[in-house]
Image 1: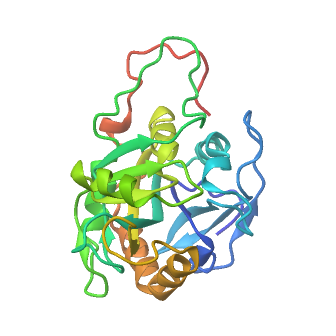
Image 2 (image 1 turned 180 degrees about the vertical axis):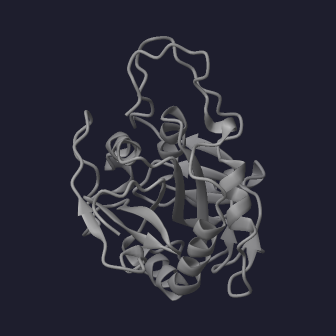
Length: 269
């Protein structure tokens, strides 16, 4: 693996993925029109393939969900040659039967954030298709890579809240009443920015807790969330590794190439 390899696949995740590579990773500093990404990008090999890793919250978890440099993160990955992104994340469950340790591969997203820059196209009349926000090919790779270590749910709607606070019981019950299954703080605008840059993107969600409105008790505590994530990190990483190996091809799939026939106000990196 050398510093000139162009990783077509990326993982955006937490610090538990730093020892993800099969070899010693190369650190790449990337500058973007939107500032620096959360951290330098690490590039190494996973199952014989060059893969980029970007710690979503920074090397020392410097960024809260509402302060993440989402635009810089996505632009940096695209400029390195990335066309396909797996996005492991921690989520709360809005269903009692989707308990901690469950892995879900959502197929829909609901945005309940506010004030986050969520587009690269402030002008030019560019409108991207987002009816199906996640790449079917990447979702299929994850679902087909399920093992016996963690229970798998092959669909679901993830509602993304502003954070950094957790939901009230009333909010949680309202989300569940809509038929939504998962709650998260970082899935938007990550997914739509990836789509605007024509990169395939799939969330891989690990349930760490039942949300406040699902069960009685003291509500969600961040220490419990981190502990549950750490408890399941080894089989969770193994799942993502198998999904990377299962991806067929390295270019953006046809469905995620949303700018065909459209004149863009700038060239994609």
